[in-house]
Length: 273
Image (cartoon, rainbow, N blue to C red):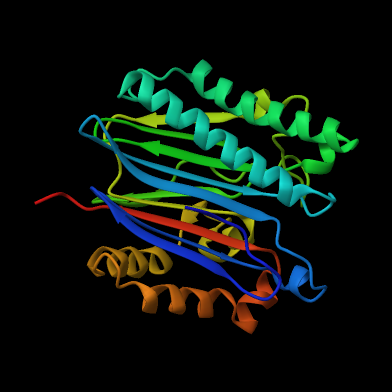
């Protein structure tokens, strides 16, 4: 599933395919909705089965607020990366052998798509600046990659932790983008041979609300109930959970702490019986 929020509404998707149940929610930031502007976040998710293997793909990108077409850049990056990942899965049917260079090649292809769009539109590449968060997980491995801020949180029996800490550079309100010339220098990659039971991806509009920057820890009280609720819901019965999340992320006190777009992807591993 993919999506971007419009000025007046949030969008959400929930699916259960094979061993992964996932939910994606994107809420327009008050800074955009007050000006009747579209949000600049974008996400792309999918739980697929190929050659008897189950995969979950989660991608989120946040268009830079200082740009004119950051939201378009975010969409281009997510859609191109999704195609790159699907192609890799079909070729090898296994992600444990994917190298860091291959992951960087996926990201490079997404940047090349931005460059092509910019040239076609007669604009600068940096007009399409966006961050990137991505995960590809199968039964035998998990790949994570990120450029810029936002965060990936994973959970297992030991608790919740971040894969990468949001990359905000040396100064406040600074981060790195796929459109940067040195984007590969800021592409962080990690892998785990044992996939986590729970995965959350979120853009920077949420990071100050669900992470403790003083201790670099995760607010488990936010994530644990959501993962528990998602795991318990039947395949097509998550309307109340998405409604709850939409209301939560749209509350005045939440907007007072963060008026940026807020995108959240949740995925839980549901063992087949």
